[in-house]
Length: 541
Image 1: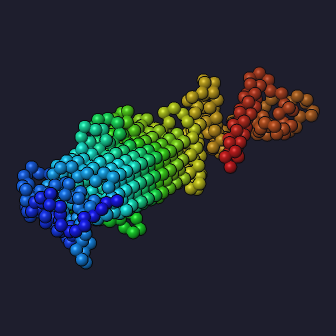
Image 2: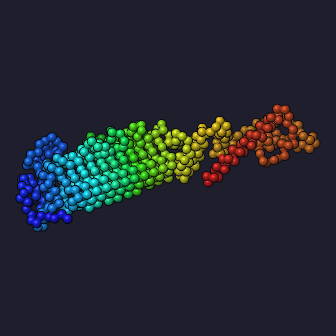
Image 3: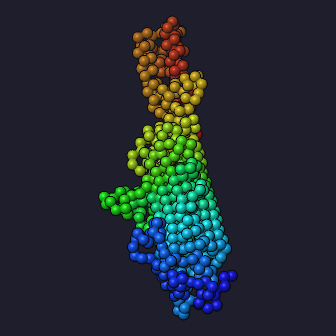
């Protein structure tokens, strides 16, 4: 337990400075202690300005107030509100229990802040310069607020538990000599993670993180120039929305304010005519690989207007992701791969110009229930989309697309997709198989265009009628032959199984015999291909 001081006065051995004495009294009053000068250049925590002793407080005094602070004055609630201070020494609250609310604004820390295993209500550090923040396994009952802070050597939030929201809006964080700038594996947040306009120079790792509300990363910039991942978040679970999207006037309220009570729905950001930095659209940008494998997103995963800069061996990996809606409308990646293998989504919202080309897309086992294209996305380009995803022939993407089109009532388009599947498969067959495939394609289009077979039958029937009309064969038995009819004779030769009794009553000779054999064989081939197509149709139904 943290034992408070028995009285309100500081221990004599502390020898408080004037700035620290004012902070002590403000703590007991629950009032703000502001050491700023009013000059923005001199008050900037990231500047090279010298802050003298009149603005300097020791980290050990702050730790004493937060862990063993004096009792408040009557009618007051003890809390720490400190602005514009240079904090010397290391602020170490490791393993402690911090009951008072504290808010540090525009402060400059000389050394890292240590909060591992700490338990607190709500902690807010705003517009501060902090060399490094160590907060593994921290537990808060309320928010952890780090908005607009600069943290050059990184943040550790491994296995942290945040009672309400984690605020990282407009934070600038580096990795120092490490690979990871933000290490938040196993993070648990009861409500939202707001990390919009975040500038992250190193890997952002959120492996196995669980977010009870939504994840907002509007306009954030993630860069890992050391190779590997810029965003490493496999097994991420978000109960509602995850937005990796551009920020503009329509979404600015979500990045700088609070989350609307009904949640934030994605809407494409558009640049405004105004040159104000608050009005210009800013893209979510990621330089380095992205791994969201096995993620679960309760409402939607939105990649809208984002820019992914990948190397040839890097991936935007969404393997086995599950979400009711995937909005995939980023800029087209110029290199690397987009991987959707095993992913399962309800609505696929996409743009034709967002998908990669030249074997840059893998989606074996990718399932979706509805297609909602934004802008034109003709079927020919959709087939090219499938072909890009299958550099080696695989039937699954074609059958998945056909299934979705058929369920949407677009039967003709579904048949076109399945026909494209058979034509693609034909290229993998032996020469004999290819010849048989071409024959099926030319005659009945693999059974998906039965009217084409009827047209061939009509052409052959008319040709046979004209030929045998001018060259009638001799009857086998002179007195028993029926009245000659070239049309019926040609039809009896063409139709397999059905016997009209005409083909056996006449005896073609010489080259006429070869014409008759050709009609018989062609009839059998057409009938076989029609039967094969009908079998496939019945099996699908």
